[in-house]
Amino acid sequence: MHDAGTTMTATSIAMTSHTNASQAMASAEKPEKFAGIDFKRWQQKIFFYLTTLCLQRFIFEEAPEVPKGTSEQERFVIVEAWKHSDFLYRNYILSGLQDDLYNVYSGTKLTKELWRALERKYKTKDVGTKKFFVARFLEYKMIDNKSVVFQV
Image 1 (cartoon, rainbow, N blue to C red):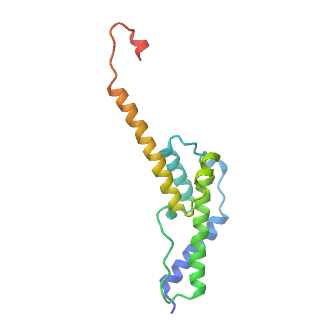
Image 2: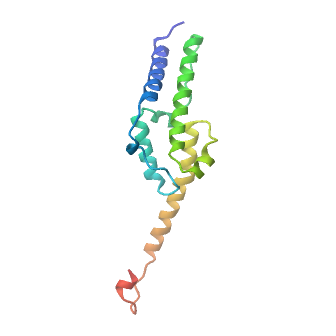
Image 3: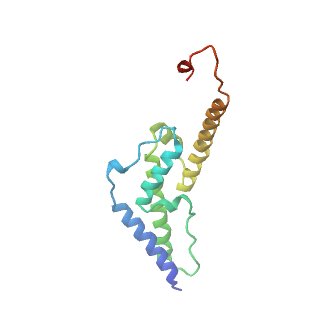
């Protein structure tokens, strides 16, 4: 059984994978390596960079389910093209990490898993830091016997 939707999906994934592999971006456009500080900014930059490579969907998608009745050849093309693109994206993200972070996260199997692990670790950390600074700001009090310049 030959399904037009399946063929379109296979062609789309295969073409995206093939096109992305041949695209090269200037090194100036690639974000700096993430060292554990200001995750949200790095995340936005790496997401934009990978969007230009048409790989951003692998953050959210699971491996495609191939409909029954799909030929073995089409099934192979769909699955392998998805695996190849996911591999590229995961490694683009890993290459955007400092070496010590690379060593920690290189064991992840899927892009989606890597992205979620980074978000769990660093978005929580950013929120805690911001709460600390806001609390210090709200607790700030001027003292009469010290100069204003010194207190600022």
